[in-house]
Length: 269
Image (cartoon, rainbow, N blue to C red; front, side):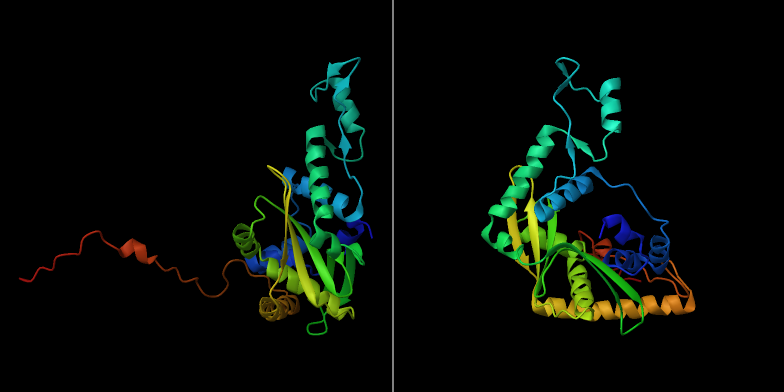
C-alpha cells in the first residue's frame, strides 16, 4: 500500500495517540487533519534511509555537480531551479547521498540487524477493529514478520545510555505495544519487538535493542487505558484541552524553598 493511501484512512494510530497524550483536543485536531506540519530535513532524510534500507529503493535524486558546460551547480541559478522543480523526488547533494548509502550499508552488514530483516514485509500496513472499544485502528510497520516486528530509528547517538533516554522521551514502548496489539488483533501473535538504532554521523553505527517483555506488558496495559479514554471521548464527542472541570495542581520544586543558610529564629518574639 502506498504511504499516501495509508495516511488517508482516518483511524487511530500510534502517532495519533501521541497527540492524545498531549490532550484529547490535539488528538481530534490531528485526526481531522488540522495539525499537519512540514517535514524537517532530518525527517526527510530518515524517510529516504527507510526506503533504501527496507525496500532497497532510492527515494531521492542526486543533483549534478556541474551544469551548462562545467559551471558548478548553483541552486540559485535559473537552470538549476527549473531542473530541481521538475524532479518528482527530493533532490540532495552527492555528499548527502553518500551518507545515506553508507548508513544503509552499515545496517545490511550488521549480522543481527540483517537477520532481523529477512522473512517478512517492509512497510506493512494493518487495519483492524479493536475488540475492546470498537475503535478502528491502523498501523504501518517498518518491518513485520509473523513472530517479530522491527522499527528503524535514526538517532544522533545509538549507544545504550543515550538511546535509552531517547526511547523513554519519545514513548517508543507505547509504539511497540500498539504495533504488537494491532498485529495480535489481526491474528498474529508477536513474540519480540526490536529497534534498530542507526547513528549516521560522524560515521554510521548500528545498535539493536529488544524491548523487555515486562516493559511491553506494562505499556500494553497503559495502551488499553488510553484506548478506553479515546473511545469515551468519541462517545461523548467531548475533546478537552489541557484541563477540563478541575485545575491542574501546580507544586513548587523543593529547591525553590532551600536556603544557603538556615534561618535564625527570633526567640524574643
